[in-house]
Image (tube, rainbow, N blue to C red; front, side):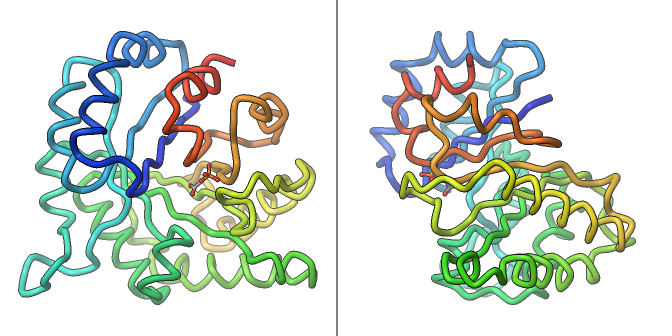
Length: 247
Ligand code: PGA
């Protein structure tokens, strides 16, 4: 199953998102029925329940863009994994570079999020990726290894659910700057190698994210061991998103 994860970020207001789903409902249903393809929408927290209800009789799945690391309690402004599960979320992105930038999560917090999601049967999509200076300074392998090892060592043996690692070079997000296919493949090999060290290689699948659009998707599809795309900007334009899924 190849996954197309539409990360809408905070781009659509509640009314706009509901309108977007309504206007494109028939086409959403049609592309979600394509063989071996899975569509997951990641709206804002406030929209999850309504969008889940709109698509409840279809194959479209809904996910969250993040979750709290905490159990329900006095945590003003946070959203619990427990609530996400109750409103129909079956995927959750964690460690996205935009979130890392604002809340500076530690590897321990990311590990706890993975374990909490696993307990609630929500599939984590754990994002990793280097900054441009790491890439140019040829330090990307050290950076990515560190991002993975620090989390893997805390979840190995405890995580019951299969999950995704999304490789997203930070400089490719929303910029149109695309890495070479061979670079993505090299990073994928590294991810698998690190996962193997922690006996997690059978639990993970690999995704790519960063400037995927309807023009470059066929090229990106050549990436070895690829199981999905995390799509930001292009998922906000239904025609582009549909083309990406259909191609
Ligand atoms: P982009 O975003 O497709 O706009 O580059 C990807 C992401 O942030 O997941």
